[in-house]
Image (cartoon, rainbow, N blue to C red; front, side, top):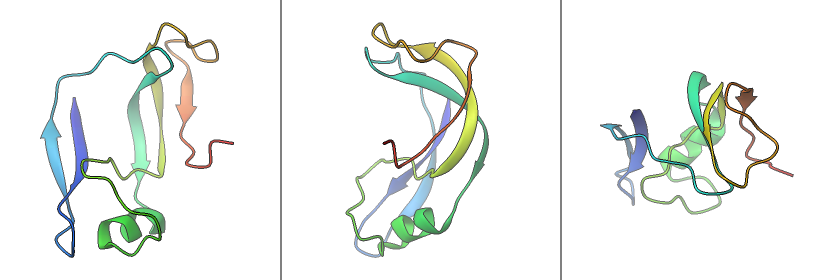
Length: 92
């Protein structure tokens, strides 16, 4: 699996590409194969250190993305493998 994660703080923020093993989802998580993504203003603020909330090391800055569910945790009931999904950072 390839991911782009936030690295560095205090004016040295940057995106770093990593090749990682696909993780198994925890009981209430799903794994999504991202097929479309875009960085928006929120993402650039996180990368630039100007977002009002603190960024976490290693976070994937992806506010806008869509893809397919490829794995679900044991307690997941609202999604199934193969569902097409999009993320939302305002979950409620």
